[in-house]
Length: 233
Ligand SMILES: Nc1ncnc2c1ncn2[C@@H]1O[C@H](COP(=O)(O)OP(=O)(O)OP(=O)(O)O)[C@@H](O)[C@H]1O
Image (tube, rainbow, N blue to C red):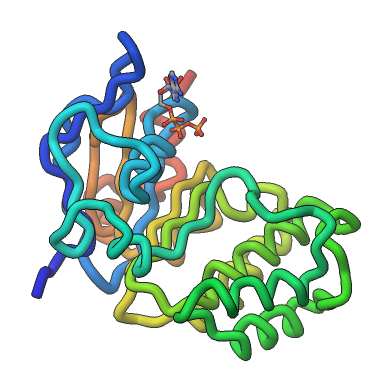
């Protein structure tokens, strides 16, 4: 039994001459909510694509619950990509049907309950929805799977600030406590209160990892303020 759901061991990724990840060593524990924070181009999406087996590392390895990304690990990861892969003409109820057929671990009742609580009609087509509503639908679908690891790449960036905390709380209320949730985002103030730990990455390197409470205590400031100071332009 592994304590860590994800382990990066001296992982490097180059795109041609560009070195996007420079020897990442990282352990992500089970049962936590983790914020993966870093400025544009720091390597967050590259790390996420490697965890999902969509890109291969140039050297080193990543292990998901002890094994390298494969068909097996994909069954246990529920992934919200940066860009949508759903067809715009589909109605919410068609997408629910698609998820029910495609993923054994999809909990249809959970998805329907969350849609109701956010007042989203199942008869609406994605193409007629606002950007924020589309994001909510996708987040609900991803969080309605019973996965070991949820990876969310920039969720809810298009949701208005007043609604973000509410959405996150509604969705996280349902999440299985044994699972791990990794959220890559720039929206730190919204997520810092729900995260147990944060990882700061900069220029392809991990520059800080720790528990949110102990970082706040040690540095005497919020994660949001720390991030702004660290990555000042
Ligand atoms: N297909 C590619 N070819 C060449 N360089 C790439 C490619 N994809 C990413 N990069 C480069 O690798 C670095 C890391 O990119 P990545 O997309 O992982 O960053 P990110 O932290 O997810 O950024 P953002 O917050 O803007 O989404 C950047 O310098 C980017 O320009």
